[in-house]
Image: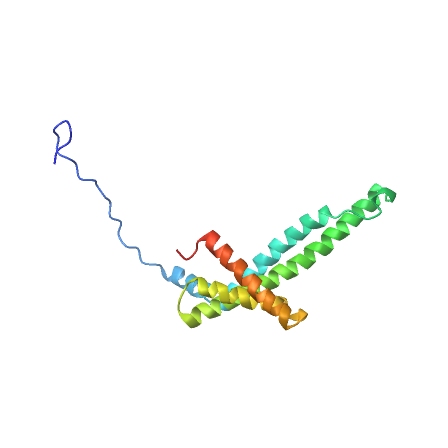
Amino acid sequence: MGTADGEAPRPEEHQIEPLRLPTPEEIRGQDIWNNCAVRSVASGVMGGGLGFFMGMFLGALDNPIMQEEMTTKQQLIFQAKQMGRRSISSAKAFGLMGVIFSAAECVVEKARAKHDTTNTVVAGCVTGGAISAKGGPKAACVGCAGFAAFSVVIEKFLDRHS
């Protein structure tokens, strides 16, 4: 089949890249990262860092009740204390969530030998249930369902398992 000006069509030139095998260092790095304990600790540290900065931000938004009666120095001291309390509290909560979620997802993924949304649902349920367990069985069930649903929404938003 020719083109409009009579020339023969040119085949598209595709460059085929050779298959590159991973280096021993890359394999060792992947093996380390596939360890559930390493993943969990890394997620806990990242979650704690995120929680710390969120706590700082939210603590800065807190206004004292008696703001009109406080001097500027007192207000600054109040804000600093609130930011410190909130950041530590949020860091602990987000770090704990990161550790539990990541550990649960990794263990379920290894047990099932599949990487899909079911792992996320189970990990979300375990995380929500564990975090809200102090409130009793009903709270744990609600936490399980809520965190599992939230995890699925985030999973679909990130579209990790296409």
